[in-house]
Length: 266
Image 1: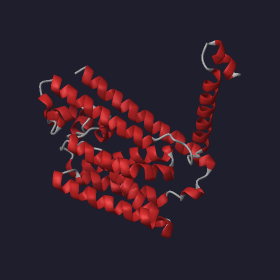
Image 2: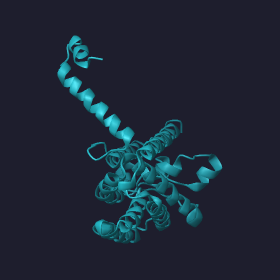
Image 3: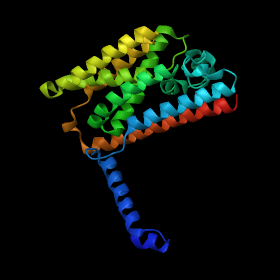
Image 4: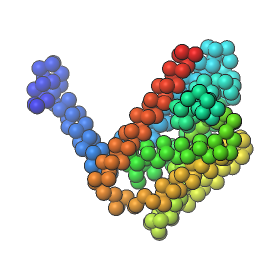
């Protein structure tokens, strides 16, 4: 199709829209082939924005529900559970499966949120640049699940919120993966070790879910142990990973929508 002529007939700048469509087509080909060396699509940034948006909605909902703005610094447990906090009895006894993912997008106050998003902002780009969006989304989702499974074994009746389990998954992956790269990856490995120490100390200070941290780190480390270096990524497998990443994104979206429906219908 001659896109320039098409948009010219609509009274729009056909040349400008033709360039935009060419850019979109180029990005689609990059995603399909797994070549993300020049792509500006960012999963970690979308996750960051999603966390900020959901926290803002929770605080506003808490204020309207009579909690005041206490939810900004220390949300009541019931408010945190309403907005996706993990509580295994609700999962096992009432079928609220979506909590296994939504808890990783919910936070217990602005300080908790700020620290986790700072870690994501620092660590996320390095990991996503190495893996590409598809593998990154699979890693983030899988380690959020391994983190909450560790919580099930350790303290099943304790409500849990926060992205730190998945973030420890990114860190655990990076420590193992970059260590395997030898001298070329030692600087990044050490950088991730520093963040692991910072996050662990912060967790001790605020009484965070160390079971989730452990579960996420182990899941990420296993991922880093089996994933080949980027130079050995195969185009055929890239398409499979991209499909798996899209599937993880859709399941996460479905989980968030299920949470919203539960709030509206409560």
